[in-house]
Length: 444
Image 1 (cartoon, rainbow, N blue to C red):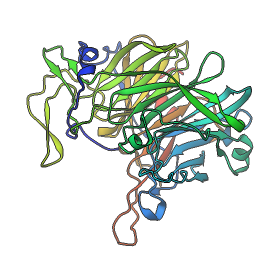
Image 2 (image 1 turned 45 degrees about the vertical axis):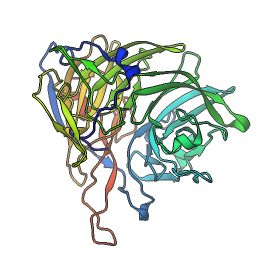
Image 3 (image 1 turned 135 degrees about the vertical axis):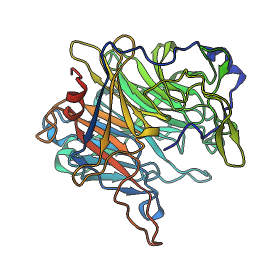
């Protein structure tokens, strides 16, 4: 959700302090050449969805891409709409399918709320090969799994089918009653392991916890999951200028993570801790074997205190000047692109200033440039992006060099509701990838 540094107050558990005292440099490694900037426009967008009762409280959040091997122009954007469910869009932005969230179980307070989504193709589950969309259901603390039907995609018919195992248990909550506390599955990414199975990393709302899961075969062709490991990121940091710092959060909350992506080239996970910065994690077996903070947000290290009267954080001391220079909190959606000759580019949404930062993470993280998506002919730009994804594959005549897809947190023009007030509207935009990579000099 759109936010800023002056937002919440820290709630750091003592158990995290031993993990958190990590000396940090002020920002990512200095680039070997002058960073570049691009202002680009989109060529397609999805219809706006509306966060009100008339539209099922739909709130666009996170996109993923399913790419057709036989008809690239028929590839599909799969996207979460929170309480509004899950949607599938063609590359021209038109709606192919919208799936509502399941009914709220009897006795439960919280309804399903689809937060993040990722797509894996060619997954081996229970002796079958499947293309899957994997979704974090933050309302019910589950991971939901949907089979993708390429025939439906080509015909504009049903693309997605819920195949979640009926006995899927909460990911983080110890009981169904605890689900209602809403410290639940939040950010999510998925990827294939060496044997073609699917591994999922999901973060926990309002905490620094994350879990790694394996997808497993369930009864009757369904798909479930089992936990492989669980760990936490720091909530407190030692500054290079001395002393410690924690991001300001609402009472009882920690600095959560949401944007997450797996790098197919290295097997590493990149995780955006909203008020802190971007981490690189490696997970092997049942343990996190390494973690490194690649870059920090501009407000990193700035002291702030939660004001109960205004329900916001107020700066309470001087800026020590140790924050990064490329990201304005929240650090949000992450996606990756393969670099020519090996290595990876990481794209990161800087939600606080509606821009994107690009890093070469082949070795040390090096900032190579940034971009924004501005208003274009008949299509508005991107504000406060939450999630993003891309493909470098040729996807038909409209996207011959690939596509970049982003959440747009403020669809315009606005539409008035029955009460005459502007409806809260969001959606997704599609940008030909070369409009970004060419001016930034990215070698794909």
